[in-house]
Length: 98
Length: 295
Image (tube, rainbow over all chains, first blue to last red; front, side):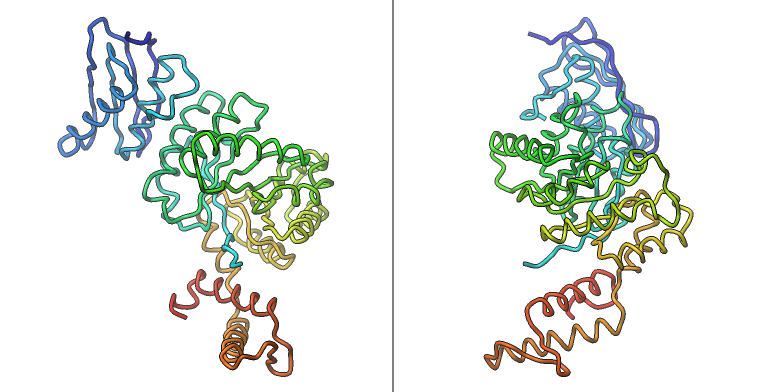
């Protein structure tokens, strides 16, 4: 069963960071909207990373808007995970799946 | 046992992504990710998650890491602890340590988490003493846990507790520094001084570093990477000390080869503490860039 989500966000628009918004959608699946200064080179890799991160957390029926400001992989992952946890209203993650 | 160099402990706010990603570049002896006072209440969760990932990133594999967690009686303390230990942190910095019970409670929680996740490496503890009560109890605190690798002075909260403020001269910290140093040395653990907040005042910083080094402190917490080379240069041994250390170590090596137990150098006895001191000076010299790695 899909988990109930609220709209939430995490991160900043500062250099080396990413700002991630999570919006619940009616459809199943995961939509990703990416805006990045390095989209041409790393766009596919960033989308794959976001998708994998969300899937691993067992989430669907969600749209993620990611504004990347040259963030490292782990920063994007951390921002996505935090935004999802906030959307779920869960303070403590299941560390075994992160 | 060989002592690890811990001259510089660089505070990195867990909510400052740029600093979290880049702190390793400045080569402090220890990177101290902060989840406590430098992180706003609304960002405790995001900072914790960021630090959890940074600790596991290859850029922090060859540098000692510490995490300053929130107090256990806050809603964040246990969550911080779990994240840091799961991510493989070397040291947990316990804030506002007033009593032995504060350390023992933290030690117990660390053990629970380590056992639950099957971590074989023992997480070390650094107790920050930031109150008059903590200073009075420093001797007992320093001796109460095998996990403790050191105790540190947290001067900003301490002076508030004393009803005074910090000065360049530092008279208000004199008793606390001496007490913390004595307590640490009696327990054979490290002693670490507080931050120097005025990042533009190099002269004042160097004056304070010379002073605390002279007292016997192992190092100092830092809030700005610019202070790292200043601190390391102040801790670099003099050429005279290096020459002495080389002579001691050569004499010790020669004596060992000849099967001699006690040796003398220039008429002075050289025993185990003197040899350890010489090794320490050579480690400092290497880390300060005064010697090559092979010397």
